[in-house]
Length: 243
Image 1: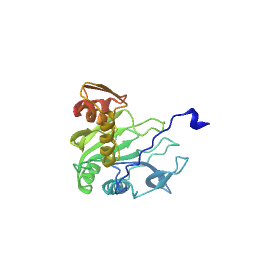
Image 2 (image 1 turned 60 degrees about the vertical axis):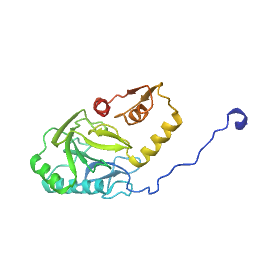
Image 3 (image 1 turned 120 degrees about the vertical axis):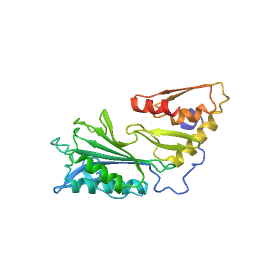
Image 4 (image 1 turned 120 degrees about the horizontal axis):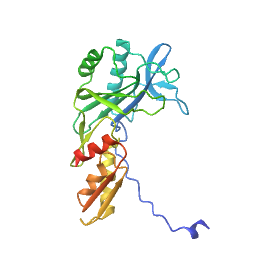
């Protein structure tokens, strides 16, 4: 029987969130066109059809507010939404990142081309209408593929990164780098991993797919050496800065 062939697996109690709402620090919204107007929201299940969305209960309130503002600004400035079928239009995605502990906000406009019409006006309105914005970036993605980001990112205004903390460790977060989207539970998870690792200060730890080095730096508190492995150059640059 299955019980005889496999050793028993111990499943410990789940450590859940006390308040599992509005925890997500990253909002990533595809942009498209519906009945001649710009929309942004979620993809319908099993498709690339965009369903308009202005609020999501697992996303931080500031993220929802920022995306709503950016969509309204784009509409008022006549910015053309991207059409994946014809490969026409400019605005493909809006990405908003939030530092929970610092309050800093990064806005990333993913565009199908390098030129943004009325760019200075757009930047000024984002600065005025989104409290806490510390960085406005443009990512250029002219590919027909469905990947969100292209290879080229430039800062339109402000900082090239925003900052946040997990525990007492400070992290720099850039436009394309991966950072855990639930910072509250990330701190719980990493603390438990550090406890289970039982490090004594002599071990060598490999953090595969390390992103910006969040696990690496947690383990570095007690390990002898930590090596992070990652394929995204911007994430490695952030990891080096965080170290």
